[in-house]
Image (spheres, rainbow, N blue to C red):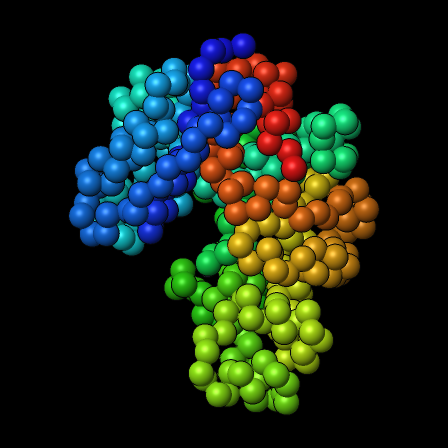
Length: 339
Ligand SMILES: [Zn+2]
C-alpha cells in the first residue's frame, strides 16, 4: 500500500471544494473557496492550488483526483467552456494539480466520479462493516440536482467515452418538442426532473389544483423549489403528486433507455434533489418496465445513493487513489467511508 493521503477536488461554477482522505480512509481535512467569477482560468487555478495546499497540511500526498462539470480529455485537459470561467477551455487541470502537490493526479467529469464513489462503497456490502447491500458489478448513477448527471461503472472502470462525456443522461430527449432544456434543445429528461424543472412543472400544473402548494405558488410570497414541492408531496398535496408522477415517468423513460444500452445490475439515484424525494426510487423502478425489455429490469436493483451530495468529492479522492492503490487497497479505503 502506498503511504500518504489522498486528495479530492470538486470544481464547480460557484465553489471549489476539497477533501483529504488519510491512509486509513478517515476524512482528515476539508477546504473550500469560492470560484473566482469572470476572472479567467489562471485565477481559478490559483485557488485550486490554495485549496490543495490547505488540504495537504503537513501530510505526504499520494494522489489527487479532481472533478469538473462537462467534458475533459484523457490527459486531464478541460475541453468545454464554463459559464463563469472565461478561458477555462484548454486548461491543463491535471498538470496544475500535479504541480501543486508533486503527486499523480486524475481529472474526470464530476458525475462519473459520483458514480465511482457509489460503486466503490457497494463493493464491501457483504462485509460486517459495509452498508449491508449486495455488491454491484455494473452500476448506473443518476444525479438529480440543478441539472441531471449520469455515470456508469463496469467492474471498477468508468465508462468515459469521448472526453468523459458518456452517459450524459440528462440530455436524452424523451419528449420530442417538449419542455425547453438549458442545453438549447427541447424535451430532455433534465427539463422534467432536474431541480429547477420540478419547480417549473409545479408552476405550470398549478392552475388545475386547489392545494396548499398551488396556493403558495399563486400567492408568490415565497420561493418554490423542488424542496418545497417534495415537502408538499410528503403531506399528500395533489399538485405535488401530479408533479411527482411527471418526474418519475420522465426518469423511468430515460433510465429504461440506459438499461437497454448498458445492462447495469444496480441503478442508483442521488444528488441534492433526491435528499427530500426518496419516493422517486420506488416509483421510478415501478415505471421502468414500460420502457425496456423484461430481463433488463428483472436483473437490476434500484437504490438511493449512500453518499449524499458529497459523492462526487469522495469519488475524486477514490479515483485519484486508484492511481496508486491496488483493488484491495482501494476497497479498504472505500470501506471506511460506507455509512
Ligand atoms: Zn438538454
